[in-house]
Every structure is written in structure tokens, then in C-alpha cells.
Image (cartoon, rainbow, N blue to C red; front, top):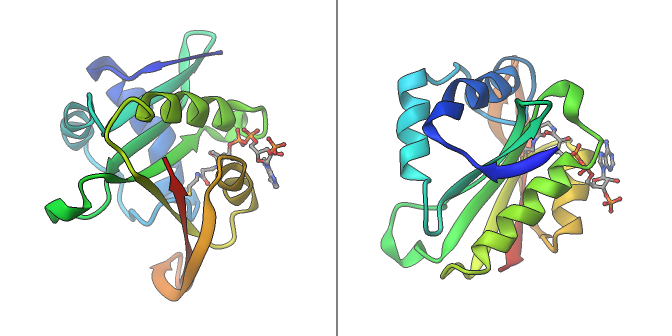
Length: 162
Ligand SMILES: CC(C)(COP(=O)(O)OP(=O)(O)OC[C@H]1O[C@@H](n2cnc3c(N)ncnc32)[C@H](O)[C@@H]1OP(=O)(O)O)[C@@H](O)C(=O)NCCC(=O)NCCS
């Protein structure tokens, strides 16, 4: 398994990993898979500085990715990023999430990033364990702010000093 920066050529593979979670899990609150055009624009927007995408590759195939992106649009939030990580279903529980986050935070240590935020729909013990392992702490839970698969969902917010 290798972890490397994503390129434009990874757009479809990243979408395949992400779209599974759009359609089948609460890991993302997207309800419809983003278009490939949107994915490519997103990659171009996360190609350096504070906003990155890294992929995990196994046997030549992308099986997961981690990203850091803008937390909120107003400029006083610039040094805060929202991070996330998604694996294909057959790639979970094997240390890939840890490897992706280790590489991502190594990169972010060289950037002007002060805080990282993670937003975790409940329940998600694997994601909570991964984030706590990287120094995220729970700051609060919004009750029933998401609605997916016909029901309301709580969302826990975590933050980390970077
Ligand atoms: C969340 C996710 C990225 C974690 O990555 P992973 O590769 O499965 O996790 P790792 O094997 O790297 O384990 C990381 C830590 O979490 C723990 N962990 C993993 N799965 C767990 C589970 N189901 N329950 C409790 N702890 C778990 C591990 O023990 C490990 O802790 P440790 O290093 O202190 O022993 C991955 O499971 C995933 O992609 N899930 C679906 C998408 C998702 O939920 N993304 C997060 C959105 S907020």
C-alpha cells in the first residue's frame, strides 16, 4: 500500500470510493453522487497549500483518500481546515485510514494550518477511533441536523490542534 498526492487522473477512482458512501452509508451527507466534472474541479482546488487530497493505492488501485479543505468560506477561517477520509468497503480496518491521516497531517504540518475540524455522522465508531488517535477531541454534537435514508441523524464535531 502506498499513499501519494492525488492527481487529476484519480478523479474517477476517488469518485468510486466516495459514491459508495453517498449511496449506502451516513459517512457523507451528499445524497447524489457528484459528477466527474465536479470531482475534477474539486481536485484542482485541493492541489496544494492547506487544501490537499491524498490517495491510498493497493495493487495499483485507489482504495481510499483523505482530504483537507476549507472549513467555512469567510477568510478569518483560513487557517482552519475540515479533514475527511474515505475507504472502499473492502479496505477498512487494515490501517489504511491511519496511514492516510498520518501522511495528510505530515503535509499540513508544513502549512499555515492552526486547527482541523472533523464532522462525524453518528454512529461511526471507526471514524471516532481514528480521529481520537490523531488527537481530535469531541467538542459537541448537533442533534438530528442531517436527514438521510428516511431519518434524522446526529452529527458529532471534533477538533484538533495542528
Ligand atoms: C473511518 C475509516 C476511514 C477508518 O479507517 P480504517 O482504515 O478502517 O481504520 P484503521 O484500521 O486505520 O484504524 C484506526 C484506528 O481506529 C480503530 N478502529 C478501526 N475500526 C474500528 C471500529 N470499527 N471500531 C472501533 N475502533 C476502530 C483502530 O483500532 C485504530 O485505532 P488504534 O490505531 O488506536 O488501534 C474507515 O473505516 C472508513 O473509510 N469508513 C467508511 C467511511 C467513513 O466513515 N469515513 C469517515 C467519515 S467522518
